[in-house]
Amino acid sequence: MTQQTVSFSRKDSANFFRTLNKRVNNYFKENDIKKTGNWKLYVKAIFMFTLLLGPFVLLLTVNLPVWLQIISMVIIGVGIAGVGMNVMHDANHGSFSSKKWVNKLMGSSIHILAGNDYNWKVQHNVLHHTYTNIQGHDEDIDAGRIIRFSKHAKWFKIHKYQKYYAFFLYGFLTVNWALTTDFKQTYQYLKRKLSYGDFPSPATQWTKLIIGKIIYYSIWVVLPLMLGYAWWQVLIGFFIMHYTAGIILSVIFQLAHVMPNTEMPLPDENGSMKNTWAIHQLFTTSNFSPKSWIVEFYTGGLNRQVEHHLFSNISHVHYRDIAKIVKETANEFSLPYNEYNSIWKAIAEHYQQLKTLGHKPSMA
Image 1 (cartoon, helix red, strand yellow):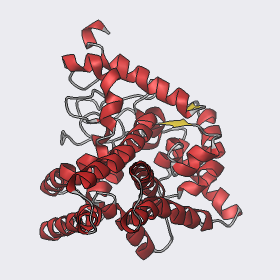
Image 2 (spheres, one colour):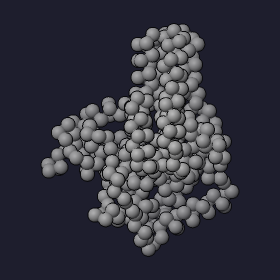
Image 3 (cartoon, helix red, strand yellow):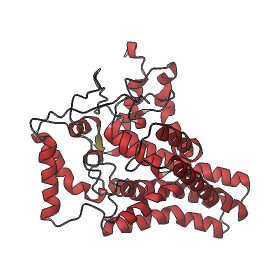
Image 4 (tube, one colour):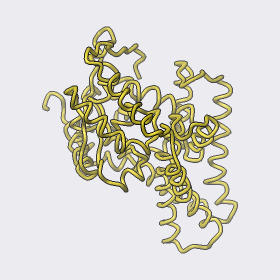
């Protein structure tokens, strides 16, 4: 990733974000509502942790037939994604609870999902939320050489076929987290002195990462082996749960930003962006399935990425309520509000975008 300094424009003569922020704040004040999570989020957190840990406890205590073992591992994968999107995500944005210790505790759930909180906060809170869709700065659109997510990324011949293989590769997201990504990111982020909040002691971060991985593998690999499962059964189960989680998380991530209706702007030669940060978010982010209760419930409000990117300090349980304010204000200021009515339409459009980006630039 490039280390060029990027700055956003401060020129917004119409004061879009100031107006929007005031309206959203007034909504919470007038209704006497906290911006953090409420009982609905806490009940949902219990449900998601049950999806994650319930089948695992069953596998360790009951002799299930093979087909039920496979189904259990799939459900665990659904639970990994569910906890990640609904609990860990809000907590590491500081919006799960008004109490810092609760956010820290719930945010640390990432360690049993295969990740690391320091790495996640840098990649997601700092790089992705600040430099959304900016090639060389937002790691979420950097898939190396194998997938081309941006028209500014170098084109290789293999990209002609990415529309066929990209969705298959999406399943390896959390497998990579568990095996290599965290170590690479810790090395790179510490070297670049990146942090979300206080910069950690390198020795502390490396110790925390290694202990976290030991605990993670002890739970998901060593424990099943000790209780009688063969190594190949554990390996297959481990792959099934992570592949399931990876597919879900990757698709949800890509539907928010790698779409025909989202832009991928670049800074000028001085590192300056055309728009203010808030307006930049409107051009680079897209919603999907705004009317689907089940999609919103399971994805932790990540189907409303526009609201999330503008107000990541607000818990996702409030996004449906503030969406009308955001949409009306964007329309009032003649700014885009990208949205697809269904998840299936969004997936089809993402596939089309993969196809478009797979064309050789000179032939496009």
